[in-house]
Length: 480
Image (tube, rainbow, N blue to C red):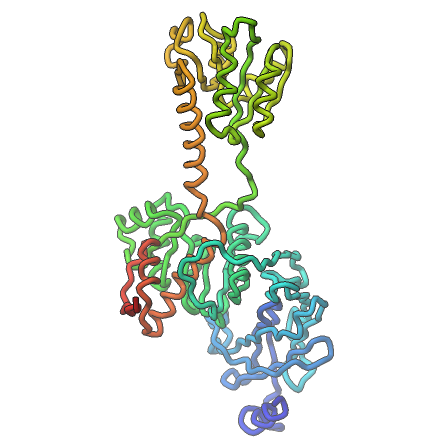
């Protein structure tokens, strides 16, 4: 194949010797990573005749490609007609976990491009066979993106994954929030079998260029473009988004509220949708800490038995109890037998008490008498209380968070507290990075279908509506 290419170049494209004009080559090896090898090259003296470049792995010729693709930045820089770029997708044999030195020269010459060679070190995950998102290159930081083979838990509609996605992240990949979003999106797209990579510049060979985020995007169109829209706080930022969405197919906001507000201020509604951000799931919910600071008495006036009754009626595994005071041994044994976590100090220790109270989620007092001194200390540091409505408890305005007199009322309080926490956790339980990636795929699938004139399924249309997408292409009926 290489011999055939050289034959046709000699026949049609190679300048004849002795034509009186010596070549004046110029070019740059811009990129080498686990996805693409690219750059540009031209002969200054023959700007309308494209040159060819040879791409080597060390001393082994990989391929010869034509440097004839248009790049706006080359035209802007005064490089002829701008049609001097080349792109070569990295072949599988280079993704073997070994270091390869990629050298680019003008074909059939000794002229090496600027900034060549570059090193890459790419591997396929042993389990999934997917390449890492970011590769190692000269002057680049090595960024390892872990692979995974676990199936996504969500069994909703999954678009086909024969989509090439390029994530354009203008922030360093290992820096703060935007870099993290780029990494997580790349990781989870790979887990779904999508061909995806990340860099700071667009890739014309990809089906989708997704820009993170809108602010640094230069509005130039490479292929199908989407932008992540974060905060819009000024008129300048609003105008920037309006300008970008002239060429961009879709602006992906972080909330429906942002979609609504931007549409209100004149951004085309048909170019707006939203995907909520995600959490890592690395921070696990802790148990609700309930504290008791009182001793018990032989006559049972502190009604400590209510705690044992409570444990027999409902699950208290969402709670952790911290108890200070003598006489609780039997009750604590009952709690621990039911798998409830208890920290117990069987005496009053003032230093430990001063550390205990501020670190509680609730202060509990079960006695029916004048009141608990711990109630006062809990309120003094802003801790909510679960106490009996009597004595000086009633004299602290708003001091009783939850009042109870009997076991039935106490049971309802603990069930309510547990349910409130459960609702908070469930509010973002589906806001996972796998769902974040899946929803992006839905939008990209729609945009590519629209570009090619293909209809979308009813299922896909339904999910797109949930993301605020206003679809404008035919919908294919599904058989029931």
